[in-house]
Amino acid sequence: MSENRILAGYEPASVLNFFEDICAIPHVSGDEKAIADYIENFARERGLSCYRDHVHNVFIKLPASAGHESAPAVMLQGHTDMVGEKTADSDHDFATDGLKLRVSEDGWISATDTTLGGDDGIAVAMMLAILDSPPEPHPAIECLFTVSEETGLEGAWAFDPKAAGATARTMINLDSEAEGVLTAGCSGGMRTDITVPVTCEPAEGVAVKITLDGFTGGHSGVEIHEGHTNAIKAMGRILSALTEPYDFSLISVSGGGKDNAIPRDCTVTLDLRDTAHTEDFARAVTVEAEKLRSEPNMIPADKTFTCTIEILPDAPVPAMDDKTTYAILSLLTLVRDGVLSMSAYVRGLVAHSRNLGIIQTLTDGEGKSNAVKFSMSTRSASGNHLDDSERELSALAAVLGGEATHRARYPGWDYAPVSPLRDLWTKVSEEIYGVTPRIEVIHAGLECGILCDKLGEMDIISVGPDMKDIHTPREMLSIPSVERTYRLVCETIRRLA
Ligand SMILES: [Zn+2]
Image (cartoon, rainbow, N blue to C red; front, side, top):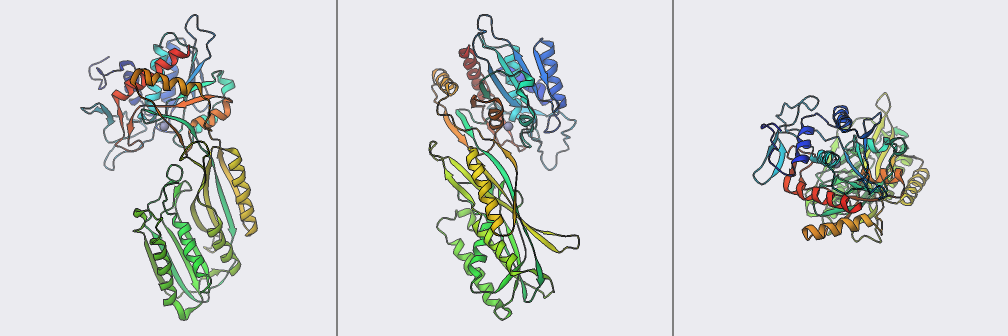
């Protein structure tokens, strides 16, 4: 090992040596060919059986130690791609440049001005170190290196276990970011778009624009139970309270930016036909917004949201007719959003949730509104829940003259009440470090869900060393935590023999 290797002298030397090699090879999502070449080359040099597919997933098999051939094989799995984020003033080119590593006094590795890709380069490094010098004795070990996890779990989707010759029924996924936590399940999900056709008529009154902004937003999976206000639903609530006293129709509506992020803003423009009561109407909007703000259930960070009301200068624009307005306002009220049900067997776990993430007014070539589109993401580990959600949303759309399309459905990994691997990892952790891992099930998608669905009955855990601020240029990976985690992985494999 040359002296200018930043990680030389740290333990576990073999893992960190492979990690430093990986950091020198550009490998952001979608650009995994070079790292796949490196891994394939590694297998060739050692005479290991290696399968590589068209998307550059790599699968390597190591036979069991002599005398342990009858022990069931174990699969190790991690993804080769990393998220490429850099500081605003960095000139780093993720397509060509290696990362500039550094180590803090207390043993955290980071990369100057960029993400580190500890997520999930450290899994790749651990797998290579194990294949290079496996714990003895060991069962047959199958290592799966997947691509493009960060951009849609695409490697896991493309992986063909039959073609690869995968046989293991036990899998350790190495894509978690907290030592002492064992992930034992994840949700599946799907995207739904509801489109409502728009019929227009000439506007008759005053155009009023209402904007709600400044909500905190958040992740539509892991933060869905934290009470963050959905700006689109909040707008629906205000408008539906005003339909009785006032006569108005919608001109346009838009809000949110991603179906998997809780929306932070929503804007509507409407045609207020009671032109004599414009001021009253504006006051009524404010009263409704303040009612929302005074909700005891609104989290403090959301209470600083803003509600702006503008009377637009008269311009003869077409407005949506009453039937369309009714359909849109009804959908805003009726699409169930947030936590739909809690798990019966994991305390505090959201089982089924939905996030109405985007609303858009679509226009034709001449800029005339022709449809309003609602985009949402529904999550659950249970396929039955997702089936229910499909039927619910299709029925709701049909009743209101719209149409629902469901796409990008992916399977979850349901918590298994019995898991010998989970028990073994717990026992090894208690024996070596006196630590009982915290078992978590997450309400977001992981590769494990797709792999579990493909491989059939699998006993899976997901673990990993401590990382901080992943997917940002502040990303850090703890060397002492890598050392402890690696020892647990090796000892668990040894006992599986
Ligand atoms: Zn990851």
